[in-house]
Amino acid sequence: MAYARWTRDCDWYIFWQAGKAQPSDDDVLAVWHVTASPGEPNTEFRYSEVTEMLAQNDFSRIRGWSPSASGLLQEALSAFVRDVATSRRGSSSLRSPDTQYPSEHRKHEES
Image (cartoon, rainbow, N blue to C red):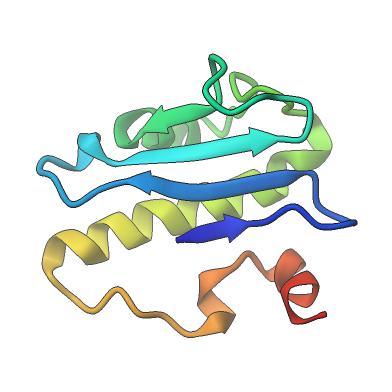
């Protein structure tokens, strides 16, 4: 599931990279900035690392982070944590487009 995609107005591609295995910490969120290459350090984070960043409201370990990206990262990481929780409960993973993408970037998906 993608939470942000590269567009003319978005420098991030954020998606749930791995899952289906127990425990939740096996789930990985890829957080790629246009300045980083996939697989570089600080571009992929386990569930526990994501929840830690959210609890501390500190995203500075993410490659390509800047203060202006904090809102997008907060929304994307929070959505990932909710989706993992939903997946673990066995609920349907299908979500409406309005809740699938961060609000600031939905308009880019529609164009």
